[in-house]
Length: 361
Image (tube, rainbow, N blue to C red; front, side, top):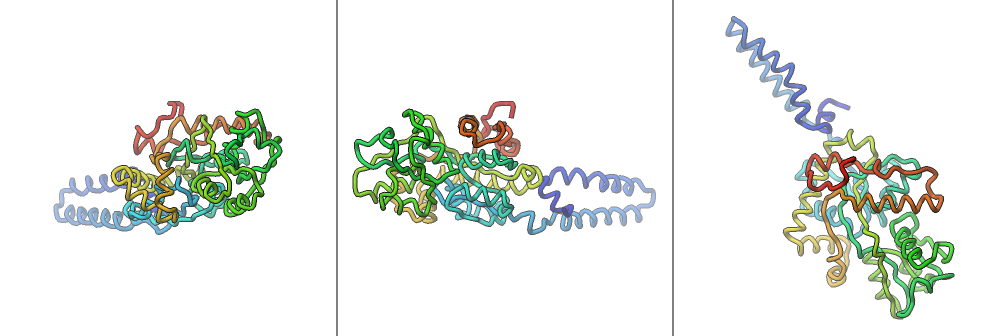
C-alpha cells in the first residue's frame, strides 16, 4: 500500500508525527549552522520537502476514498438514503458506491464474497456468517425497531397455534426467521409443527395472494402490502422480546486496515442522524422517494423506527439469544463468542456516549 494511502487509512495525526521527526531534526541542524546563507538554503529545502510531503504523501489514491456499501432496500436503511441524498458521503471526502439488495442476507453475502467493502443488514446474517466460519465484525447499529419485523396471519380469529400443519412463508437466513421461531416457541410450537416455505422476497406477495401460505414472516412495508392485498381480514403480530437492529459490518481485518475510510463513513451516518433529528419530515420524504412507498403508508409505521448510530447492549442481547437458538437447532457447529462479533473501538473513539456496551468490549 502506498505511504499516502496508508496514512489516510491510519489517520492523519500518526503520519504527521512520523514525518515530523526527520523534518524537525533536519530543521534543527540547519538553524544551528554557523553559515547563515547555507542555513537559509537548507531551511528552504526543508520547507519545500514538507510541501512535497503534503502534496504527495497525503494525496490519497482513488481507492482509499472509494468504498462499496451493500445494503437492503428497506426502511431500516434510512441513514444511507439521507447521507447519499444530502451529499454527506462526498462532504466527508468519500466516494461511496451503493449496492442495493432485496434483503440484508444477500448484502452480507456480497461482503463475504469480496464484492463489497462493507454491508448493512439485520443482526441475523452476521451471526449466520460467524457460524459458517466467516470473520465479520459489527461497527455500529444504524436503527432499532420493536414493531417492524412480524408475522401476518389470515383471519380475524386466527392465532399462531392455528398455524400447526399450515404453510408459512419466510426468507430463510434473515431476522424474520428468528422472529417466527420466537413467536412459535411462545405458543408451544416449533418449525417441525408447520410447513416452512423459503420464499424469495420478490415472490412473497404473489405467494400470499395465491393462497400458497397461511402466514408470512416479514417486515414492513411488505407486511402492510400483504394486509392490503388480502381478500379477508388479517392480523399482524410482533414479538414482545425482540428488538431488531441493522448493523454496519466489515471483514474483521478491514476494521483496522481501512480505519480512515470507515471513520469517514460513520461521520457521514452521524450527519444523517442529526439531519433526520432536525428535519424529520424531509428525512422521511427522502426515504419515501427512494423506496417509492406511498407517503400515507410510510407514515403509519415510521414512528416505530429509531435511527441512531449506536452500539448498545440490546444488540448483544439479541445476538446471544439467536446464538442459543442456532446452537439448539444444530445450525452452528461450534459455540459463537458473540462479543467477538462487535468492534466498538472506532465508534467509541468518535462518540463515546454512543457506545453503551459493557466495559469488557
